Length: 89
Image (cartoon, rainbow, N blue to C red; front, side):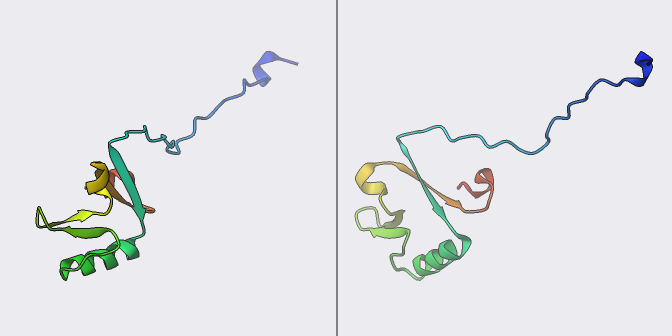
């Protein structure tokens, strides 16, 4: 048996993207929604009514994300099934 016939095992690296866990930031609040729920909420807000995700804040006279006034967090709405980088802001 000659050594030329033997081949060394090869290892392939996976090219699939890896999932990076999010670092916890106590000043950020993330809200995960479906496209359908976000569209419905935005339609309601555009018509001038409070919605599932936004409420009217009278002192600043603008719509804000629910829960952001009480806890002074920066809110992010992320669409389920979309890459987080794409769905931010």
